[in-house]
Length: 219
Image (cartoon, rainbow, N blue to C red; front, side, top):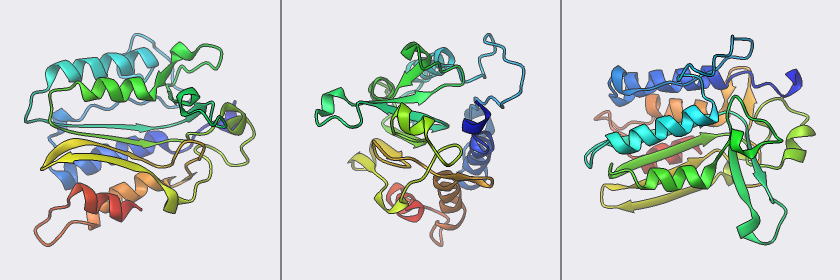
């Protein structure tokens, strides 16, 4: 429904992709963008459209392609939900990313967050980062949201799981924890905007910024 439509996630994705090239030294040809603007003609055969199948396919491709010395950064901006968020049993909680073809009656049209992270873990690249700017609350909260898009979250309680060994590791940085919602405005998602500002303004005099410094700047 229109009242649940996101206003800025496509802009966020494009702006962050541009920031990686402009401020972080990424090569344009190494940045792969998948977006779908509400109102565009939907072509399920277009592999740049972020359907659940296309997202899984691209992740599989990257996992197979990259080598030990590569850096893999995967970013998701959009809707997200968590099932079993009110359960005291963590094993019953499951977070999903909502692809552009997500249908609440078919979980196969969602991307299971844990399965995605498990897949990324198998990638040979020794430096991996997963960034997500999306809600992690229940379907019911999404349906009853007073705010459009990614909802409301106290940014001071954002979560990050960092697994580092020396200069290598797998970092997961999220806009919010399970059961929380992430906020967007007409100018962009607050979390993604902070990440972009961190790349632009958070570097030291040598023009460098560590993952920890980037995280601290965003929060």
